[in-house]
Image (cartoon, rainbow, N blue to C red):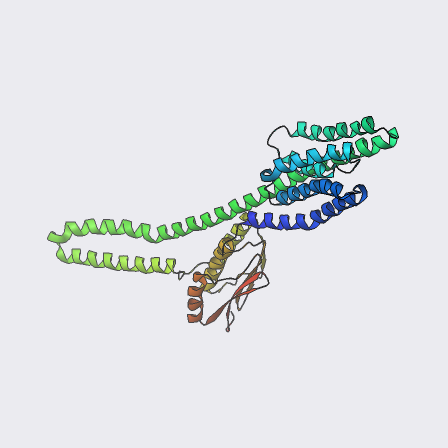
Length: 365
């Protein structure tokens, strides 16, 4: 399983926004309909503004507002003068307030101008109502000009820091993804370094011994044959070491692996806790268990916390951030056989979003 941290975070924020924002919008819009509409055609006209507001908000939570921005804006821009000048509905600005407030902070340009134009338009249209219909001037101005303008300005003003908040969250998630990718790249570089350590010196020695054997093949055949035997043995040993490295059989230093795992997790933005200390006679396979588990967490989980526990009986690594059905990585399956051949047991368990990897031996050290 592979997870996109940014996508997962956006999904969680979308759900949170829908749960916390949609009911108040629908509730407030329905209340305005109940207070202002007195006939079915008034309900029909005013409800189009509410529907546009709901559609715009839902698309805003999905980061897809611009796809519906124009039709929603056109509808609400028409509903407000229709409500204020024809239907005598001072709450008809509600749809335009919601659509405009969510749209303005996301404009690529002229955001400040749009932030001024939005409440200005609402105020100008509202000011036309007493000019056309008369009525008690102070009360009418409050209901059609002051209140709609102030509410729209406050809502739009709130959406600017709200937009910045989501930008910061997205930047943080992208940064964590880059750090995780960098951590995996570092692991690959370290693997390449191990491979170079195994093969680099060997190939250089083989080159020298081959050149020597070519010189001795006529003058000292016995010595040349001995050099060729040493070359064969050296190559065979290198093949064995390479196979052990590839199939996770090479012995690793637990202290070094613990420091490396801590650095990798911290680089990926994962909080790591280490309980216990490395014993002087720690089993060689513990380092391999830790390295394999570290790689699996970085590649296959959306972890935020990792706890590493060292005991005389073995090692336990617990991480969160596991979603959906989990298929055991092939590296763990191969490592389980190595641990079993050494008299230990390797367990991998997933429960309630938490993955536990534990290697234990019955004869603790």
